Length: 381
Image 1 (tube, helix red, strand yellow):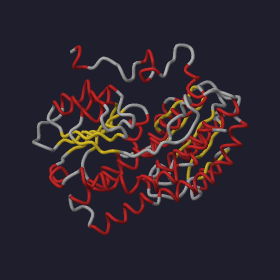
Image 2 (image 1 turned 30 degrees about the vertical axis):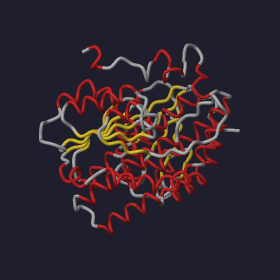
Image 3 (image 1 turned 135 degrees about the vertical axis):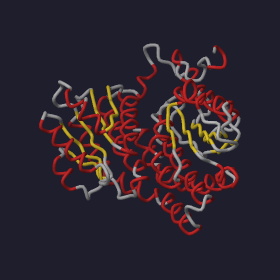
């Protein structure tokens, strides 16, 4: 059984399972005073959690009309936290994301934000964890257990979606209380988020056959590039992460414009290159990049709705995604990369996470990498 594929198939049901309890928790935990006082967001995490922060930045700024600095936990904890402007109580809001709640760097980021006078919020599925303890407000993100063989680690797709939904619902909460959305409009946005279930199901059904075919044709490849812009730059990063975790192959997530400045000069001509767009603000550049990539010998796959016909015609493969508002598009745009990573691992007969061999160990959240036991800034500054 391909357990990563099984988890991807479970995503539509996951939305239905977590929406109501998560929405209720957010409305209860995030009060009017904080919503009305806020002037700036800092949203931080590591790995997939950082990608979730990045790809919801556009939604926060579009809905709440406040600046949102999405950055890695390391950058925030060791560099940005000390520079937070002293604008008054509850004006700076730091949201730290860690489903496991055990990532030491994210806990550190929350503590440093709190030390700097910010209001801190943990988005985690693990009450009582170091990340939860480091924050003033803990939003419990329910991630129901998914059955897989004991001891098998599967690249995370369920936790990533849960974090995204939590962040979108937080943005709607702030926008509603600040008067930027009336009750009816806020209810409509919540209905759109609940409807992710339907759109994920559509995307899986449309893209899975393509992923199976591409996995067979590109099984010999060992390098992949995923390019996106705006909210889908993070989709490129996340898709590359799933490829690395599932197959061990080199994979790069890149901003679409930066691809034209950098990967354009890579000497390996046939590197599979995925162009991710929601057929919106970045479409013209996506088409130009596709033309350039094909001209220099790249094999191009488009991850886009069926409406982007010119881009689709320029590409070797098309992974269809459901039509959705651009600020929410990372939810469905991540699915093709997830599916391809899962089926490529199957084709290549690769164990997820390299089976933690060669000095890699899951102990302590990464063994010698010490994801969960890393020395904190407070300990040695």
